[in-house]
Every structure is written in C-alpha cells, then in structure tokens.
Image (cartoon, rainbow over all chains, first blue to last red):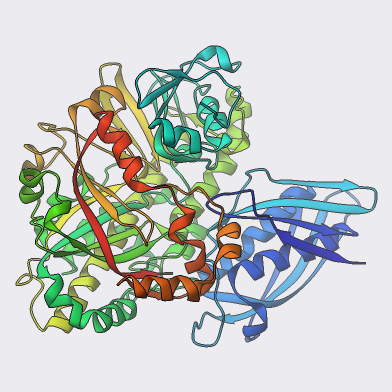
Length: 145
Length: 483
C-alpha cells in the first residue's frame, strides 16, 4: 500500500494544484490530505496538542474526498490551527456508500515555531476529478490560496 | 499576431478585441477583451475559453468582458465582467470570486518620504504587529455571533459606530461601506465560525498592506489627484488589498453546492462546473445574493478595522494624531462582487470578478466629493513594481458596465515562481531597491515576486487608451507586509 502527491507547475496560475495517487481509495485520501496539510505549513514543525475526530459519509468517493479536504480548511480557520498528523480509514458500507472516519491532529498557529506556508481558502471544483485505473487511484485538486 | 487560442479574435480597436458568437456553440453574446496587442498575446488560453463560456450563460446582456489584467479563474476569468437581466438572467458565485468583496483601499497622508524613511523599519514592524497576516491569523477583536451578524448587516458603519474610523470615511467607500439586502439568516454556521475571528486580518496569497510614495513626476492628472488629496512631492500613502477572508469563501462554497442541485431543477447547463448558477430571481439566487452581501459588508468592515490599526501604528511611530497627519481615506473599492445596477437595457446584475467599478463624473451613485472627478479606481501591482490610481470615465459606463481593471494579473504560476527564486532572495533584492518587506511566509513571498506578474504599466495603458479609465498617479512601494 502506498500513496504520493506532487504539486503541479502549470495549472492554476494564481493558486495551487496537485495530483495525488494511492493504491486504494484510502491511500488516495492519505496522499491528498498530506498535500493540503503541506500546502498550509511544514507539518514537521507543528505539534499535536489539538485533536479533532471527523466522520463523513457520501455516495460518491469524489464528493467524500472534496468534503474531507474542505474540513481541513474549515478547522484551520474555525479553530486557528495547522496540522501535523492525521489518521483515517475509508470503508464502503453495505448500501454502497463510502464512509470516512478519521482524526486530525495539530496545534494553534504560531509563526514563531511553525514554518507557515499558504492560507488555503478552499478546495475548488476547477479541474477536480477522482479516477481509478486498475488498482491505482488518482485525484487532481486545485486549491484556492 | 500569435494568440493562445484557435478562436477567431477580431480587432475592434487597438485596445478592444471581439470573439464572435460563431466561435462556440451556445454563445448568446460576443466576448470582448480589453488589451493592447502585447497584453493580448500574453493572455493564457483560459481567458479565451472562460470568457466565451460566460457568454453562454442565460440572460447575459451585450458582451462577456475581460479586462487586460485577465487570466484564468474559477468559472469566470479573473478580470471578467458580465451583466445579466434581473428577471431572465442568473447569478453565479463563479462570477464574483471566492473572496467576496476582495478590494483595495488607499489612505493618504501629509507625510513625505524624508519624514518616513528614517522611521520605516519601526513603522513596518508596528504595522506588522497590529495587522495580523498569514495562515490562521486572528484579529484583535473578539465578537460573539450576534455582533458578527451586525457586522454582516452594517459593514464599515459598524466599525465607525465603535470608534474604529471617522464618519467621513464612509463617504469614501463604495456603497458607503454597507450594501443593502444583506441577510445573515442566509449564511451558514460554518461560514460564521470561519470568519468570526478574522476581522482586521490581511490573509495571505496576493493580499498585502503597502506603504507607498507618490512623486510629483508620476502624477499624470494633477487636478484630479489634488481633488483626492494626492499632492505628489514624495507624499506617503498606504494601500490595503484584502477581502472577506474565510467567511466569504465559505459563503461561495456553500452556494456552489446549492446551485449545482438548483441548476438541474431549473434546466440550466453550464460549460464548467465552477460556473454553477441559479436564476437571480429564484429563491436560491436571492438567498446567495443576500449571503454574498453579508460577506461584502464584512470585507468593508475588515478593511475599516485595518485602517484603524494603520492610523494607530502611524500615531505610535510619529507621535502625532492620525488627523494631524491627514490620514484621510482616498477611496475603498470592491473588485469581486455582483451588484444590481441600472443601464439602458434595464436593471442588471453586474458581476465583477477581478474587475473594479469605474463610475464617471456626474454619477449620482458617487459621494459629492467625487462627482466632478469620477470615481477613484485603485489598482494594485506586484509588490516589486508599483500600483496605480485611476479615475472612472463616462466611457466605462457606456462600454463596460462601468468596469475596468483591478491589478496587474499573474503570468506565472505560484509553483513556477517558487522554483525560480527563494523568498529570502526576494526580500534581499527588494531591500536593495529600497523596499522593506515583512512576510509571514518566505515561500509565500517568493510566489509574489514581481516577475510572476504582467507589467502593470502596459495594463494601465490598455484601459487608459480604451477610454474606460484615465491614469491619475503611480504609487511606488517602500514597505510591504505580506501574509
């Protein structure tokens, strides 16, 4: 099982775009989550004094990823935090819907100890897609900064 | 001329270019781009694609427009202007922008460069301390939810009533800093949670607070400049660029979801998911309009709180009152907004996304002090090059739904800019050129390097020659705060 992400140079002139990959949908979520966290701050400089359990269910895995990534942006503003680590599982229910259960960890923004990057304002639907080829999942995400 | 499109682009004048309705299936009106040939050739393919997508939206009138600082955006291009009939037309968050009422504010002073230069380091440190910027920044004000709803309804006036500004400031703000028909009941709890602690904060990205100097040789219209308190003689002014922060973004995100579903119900199809819209006259359209106006008023209040903090910082550093230093507001103008305005076609919902209102002389919508000159238009350049003060014209009212440019416009992505230079290097180079930069994020600073933007002088020349604004003065940066 593995995941990865990389930021894209030639897409989103004024904002940030990334591709995320995973060997499963859950791994894709891991890759995309790492990208958004990295866009906000260097997670190695962020402590883990703040914790937030998150649960979400959607029929469409693309909508589930969109809402989950939007949750990161929401908590960043609502609680004034940036993120260090996270845990998540993505499972499929008997009714075919996708269920995410996770926990975000981080701490209050403190520019004197954390390497802060972009104040991400939102996840957008511009060029947004989630696809699967064989076992490999791919998401393209443009982030408004 | 080599353009980044295969579409037919017809020359109307040297500054106005038209894409006819025959170039894309579904176009209801032609698309018009305002640009010199040089600027037109530098425009990315997204501009041509997106402005013609906008031309397909129901109820659009006359033209879908793009200003010379245009580049691709979400749905509409940045620099996009479109007007829709209030009865048969739509309203779209993609035509307003996520950062509702992102805008520019300019404050004049009686101080000269000679007076400020020796104190510049201290001044920038004090401004950096008083105006929070960057990721997760929260303001000095702590509001409960009821008070925040008052901000949504009353905008800048809420601040003035609490001593955060002068009553005459309101005369120098678009819509006097308070747009009617704002209804907090149409705003989600999530949006309130995101915005409640952000009043008085800059944000990041391309938002900034800049101390600038106006030299006499860069004042191009002395009479208009003087009427606005711009005298030249190395005069110090302060520019602020920011908007409604996370609050406005959440409002836009919330209603994009609502509109995605509503479009199916109303039988509307769009060329791009980010153009999700609803009939303006529908329940969903009116709800978004009411929520968007809440975000617009919050942005006016945000810039007003920042103005108060700027005045306090100057008072602390120069040990004089802000009034004694003549720190009057030149103007505050939105460049991400939708408003109902009257034109020969009737009442229209004018969407300006990365475009500034530019009312000409005599407009009844302007405060008395601007009736003779036309409306001040504040255009921010890159932090390395400079900015411009322009005046609205009758030509803009006639040709572009009273709209013009808003800034210089990016030509290079953030990722490319970061690969080309480091933030520390930008900071050092700018210091060598006499510009002191305080930045929360060094990578964010690299992203905003001057070479990532179009030449603002060429952009300004486009709108001046097209007659939709006239150039009043250039403003050169000496100090910059970035998130």
